[in-house]
Length: 137
Image 1 (tube, rainbow, N blue to C red):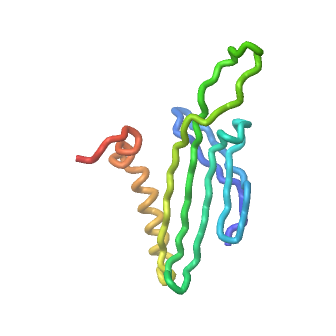
Image 2: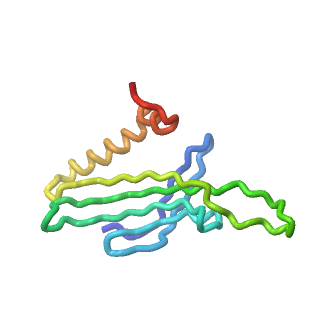
Image 3: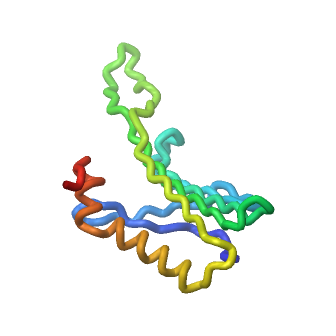
């Protein structure tokens, strides 16, 4: 079982910037992390990892990894009082991945599905669909 630690991920800028997601909470089955650099809680990018072990009804380990990227409204400091309004959430980008791994799967099977998922997200065709809201024809 890995010990909880920071998660560092580069963004997609022309000159990538490393973002550190520090642990926020940790429980028996899940943990959450946030990049608190922006200083505004409503705008913290976050990662959550939740694992559900096999049960009598399902012989699967289910691991859900959710990444959220809140985008704040652009506000101006042109109020009559001169006090800037509180930041507000404009929208949130979300990636939600769930891995279903049978309890009897081999280590190599689990490594393969992770490699395929990474490869799919890195593929130019998939990137075009995601980045440009395109469909495959």
